[in-house]
Amino acid sequence: MPNESKFETATLGGGCFWCTEAVFDDLKGVISVESGYSGGTVVNPSYEQVCTGRTGHAEVVQVTFNPEAISYEDILRIFFTVHDPTTLNRQGNDVGTQYRSVIFYHDDQQKKAAEKIMKEISMERIWDDPIVTELSPFSAFYMAEGYHQDYFANNPEQGYCRVVIAPKVAKFRSHYKERLKK
Image 1: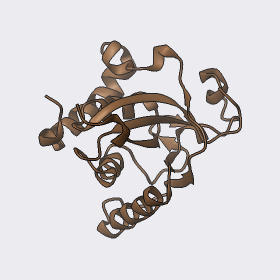
Image 2: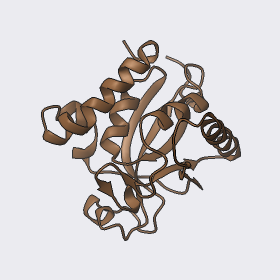
Image 3: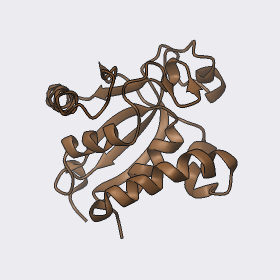
């Protein structure tokens, strides 16, 4: 096992945290993924509070990864392929500021990397519309309630999981076969 002090953290919001967590859980080099809330003003909010859209928090995942196995830039490239970064405060049928596309950078190096990747993605014209992903400094992460953790893995037959998450995970797995955990 690599030295844990060398692990890094990425905090990303790409709509519903269940979808984002399910993708990053499968990725080589990722040590852990936790669903939670970040970017708002309410300390230790509940899911119900965040769902009102009045806390300022986004649903996010906090990804702990080994930079010797996967770079922060690659984490971001994958992030931009598994959600739509061009819709303001929305992912599919999920609407509200809590579903915004956001990168919470932990230091200047992450900020510069995010700016670089966002510029690259924009220049590649992968999306018809401009990227509206928010880039903000990280301040706090509040872990979501236990039933939100590993939601897709624990509830694969639930309707939302079958209709929304499973197709995203299948697309990710087919596109990034060589990057999957065994």
